[in-house]
Amino acid sequence: MSSEKDACDRSWWRRGPADFDEEIERLKGPDGGALIPWLLMAVGPASDIVQGEVAHPWPAAAGLALFCVLYVATVRAAFSKKRGAGALPFRLLCVLAVTTLALAVGYGGNFMLLFVLVSLCVGSVSRSRQHLGLMLTPLSAAAGTIASLHHEGFWATASLAYGTFLSGLVVSVIITLFHAVAQLKATRQELARSAVAQERMRFSRDLHDLLGHTMSVIVVKSEAARRLAPRDLDAALAQVADIESVGRQALTEIREAVTGYREGSLSTELDRARSALTASDIDVVVQESGPPLSPQAEALLGWVVREGVTNVVRHSGATRAVIELSTGGGRAHLAITDNGGGPAAVAAVEGRAGTGLRGLTERLAAAGGSLASGPAPAGGFHVTATLPFDEP
Image (cartoon, rainbow, N blue to C red; front, side, top):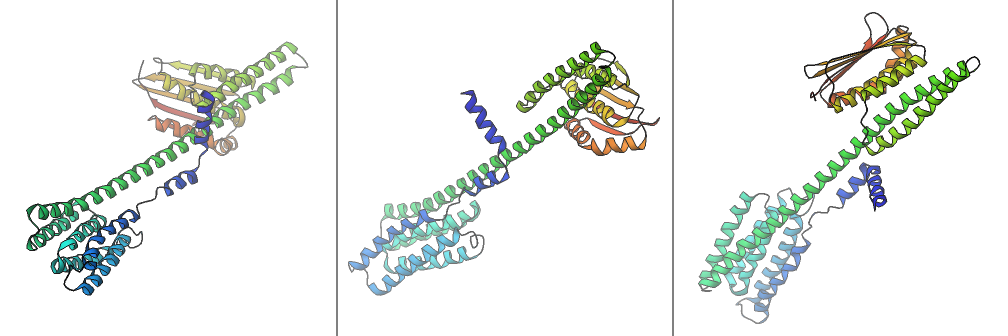
């Protein structure tokens, strides 16, 4: 079961922007096709014409045919992506309403049912509740008034007016709900897209910091083992053992980075810094003062120590490095300074190690901290991190 969940998580992580765009494209809006079958209500007026219950059947038939054409055109225009936001749907609706009024006043009977179809079009054309009320209220009043003129009876008149108003209201509510659901789905896709981007950024940043430091330590210790092997085999074997330990720890850290659960330890990173700098023949001084840090602050500053020491080992050409950590007043200050070889070494750090420093800047900024780097006043290079934290 867990393997199926992991596979699902990995497939989600691999999804790109095109996958989410494809899902959004599948959220097709209503096209008005569901309103076309309601034209079956025109069967009532048509039966009046066929059965000879109207005085002038041919004009009535022409008017009913015109009504059907206008109804379909209004519905299609209201749901059209190109014309739906323009004035065409409203103009067609006005012509449809006038045609309905003429047919209802002239013939009455089942022609009164056409008001319900006009109401459906009103619900499709209206773009706000205010406009909906302004159009449905007079339409329902007209339907009730004309029905009373034809002596349809109180209940028939009231039912027609109520049905006319309710039909347009229901259509408008359904369309509004659909657009709300579509917006929610689009928002969900955008949130998922953002989550994927953030996860990829986290993984690439962690991978850079982990591998950059680990490979540097392995290279330094390998060089030390090669130098020591001819004259001190035991010391060389100790370096090889350290390489094995660093490699195993790197595997563990990479697995934790992939799953997103890695939390670094500042004390562990300081110990590794001492080991890596010593193996590179760089004298190291570590100064710590102040109260202990919170686990979150330790993890962030551990990344700073890791990246800063990696830069010293790989690029500085220094013979001495100082790591200073001071905490107090809810803020931590970490500085890594070396006495490297001047402008060339500084350019190397700012160029080749720029990705790591940018990643650290992003990490600290997300936690309310800051990172500064550049030439040290007394020569060499320094990296300074400031981070607020909650004292345990």
